[in-house]
Amino acid sequence: MNLKTSPLAPVKFPDMHALDGVQMWTAETGAKYKNRPDLWLVKLTQNSRVAAVFTKSNAPGAPVEWSKECLAQGVSGGILVNAGNANVFTGQIGQDDVRDMATFAAEKIGCKAQDIYIASTGVIGEPLILAPIEDGVKGIQLSDENCSWLDAARAISTTDTYAKGASSSCDIDDTTVNICGIAKGSGMIAPDMATMLSFIFTDANISRNVLQTLLSELSDTSFNAITVDSDTSTSDTVMLVATAKASHIEIDDINDPLLDNFKQALGAVMLDLAHQVVKDGEGANKFVEVQVAGAETEQAAKNIAMSIANSPLVKTAIAGEDANWGRIVMAVGKSGEKAERDRLSIYFGQHLVAKNGCRAPDYDEDTLSIYMKNSTLKVAVNVAVGSADFTVWTCDLTHGYIDINADYRS
Image 1: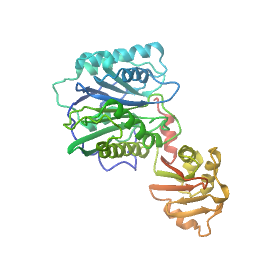
Image 2: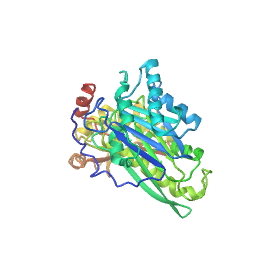
Image 3: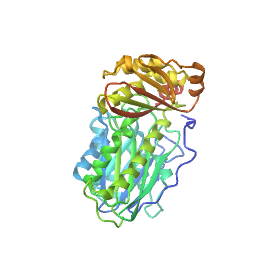
Image 4: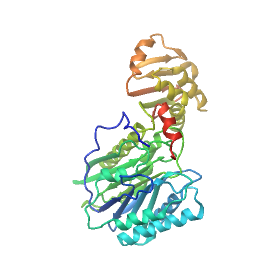
């Protein structure tokens, strides 16, 4: 499947720091993709701390179940990711395959199989072919230099049209710490967590409990606030690893003011990665911010925003560059949340299109038509029943989405 790079793609992959305590390598197994890495192995330094959030799908893949157990045990040996086969709905053999993958990785980097986190992405329901993965892991030379973050991002990709990475630095108690993250995601994006794979690393010295709290909290306004197609994946995994190599004192209190800069920097990296996933939405031409205000609660605001962002009618209108605000009204109404119809207001960008339950007096179709040609758009709705707000991000729905998904398994 030859995919054109998304028109919303960044100009280039970002420059990213090497991180003390993280060694990583890629391999080309050829199991599904040719002439590109599709296997990624990470060795973590002793005393690393791992946090993770996973899909809430009721049909999770065997790798998710394995990695959940690793997280519960607090292990931090390494990570192995394969792209091309999700190892989902494969029965007992799928569970056996995960254990075998962990064994391959453990034997390579020198730890126990139970210390290896596994993530897989790709086709659902097809048995995993282990031989190429085993050969790929065995062929890795630990004496080689670390692979680049770019190669790592490519290795975990499926229908992505570009590699996704983000990084930041900040100070904790006068010590500079670095944050580097990669992600994959393009379709099957409607999170109960993140609907993607993402791996974020830092050299900060932060306790496991604080790390987990940060990841869970910041996921709600980043990976949990995006949607491409309303479908939640069976394989979603977002991991945050702290190697504790930085020289500052350990942060073991989520309310410690020394954590403030780090939380801001981590949130920026996670939001950047989440936005990149939406900008690479299958067939996408437009990146859309949906902001809902005046809701009864924050959850209500999110539900209304997601109702708008997931509506095929809204998304196809945006693809057609049609400011069809009537479809926004429809999506607000179907959300099931309280909204004051006769006080409702809707903006497209800075342009007021609806006010007090009807079309705005200054509405101008020609002005809106010009605005809708932009590649980045904003829809803002005030439902006038409270003071809560929430913002989500989505993309348009084009025929390209159908082309990609009708041909996905071939």
